[in-house]
Length: 281
Image 1 (cartoon, helix red, strand yellow):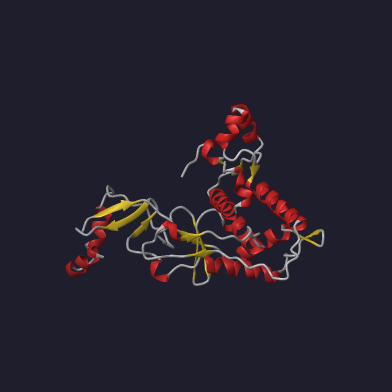
Image 2: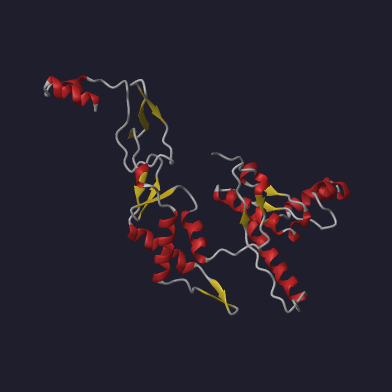
């Protein structure tokens, strides 16, 4: 899908009370990450809490003030970092003096047979920080389409899935971990640059992208310019390549107008019965 500049840089303008609404914060973060996965540069517009929605803000301050707020919008990463900083300040300023431990919260999804959207119970847990495995998956495998077959990774190259040598993937993961740093006791360190962490990331991605072997190389002939499908009436048609169709090979170009002379000469080498079977195949 192609995006114009407008759609490649979306601005999310939620009501200003999102800071006190954990489910709203979680929804913004989830939506923003989905947009980033599709190549968007996401920004979050914020304004003073005395104005709830953008309509209230514009009514009180005018369109130019809103344009300025948009111009100063935070990236999704900056917005998330600011929220966490604010949460830490609140935790310090409001100590828990109760003898009773606070109740643990988690995301709960209640699914009924009617499959109604009203059955969703939003979570009240704070936004979780991704660990290094999740971050490496997003950085290295967030773009394009990947599948794993029998423990081996394949990458979509436009017409089929191509095997990625394990040695190259291990090196690629190792190079990323070698530049990844985390803050430990106030000091930034490359504490994930270990061979065991390479295995952890690779195994995670392999398990996350595993596909059913029965879905590999489905019916049809995968050609360089599309997939030839046989219709129920015996005819055939050419359909576009689709990453949801997991082919691990690609053949020559399909051309219904090609000169059949050479093919007919080869078929003459076969007995009539064998020629009939060959044509059916």
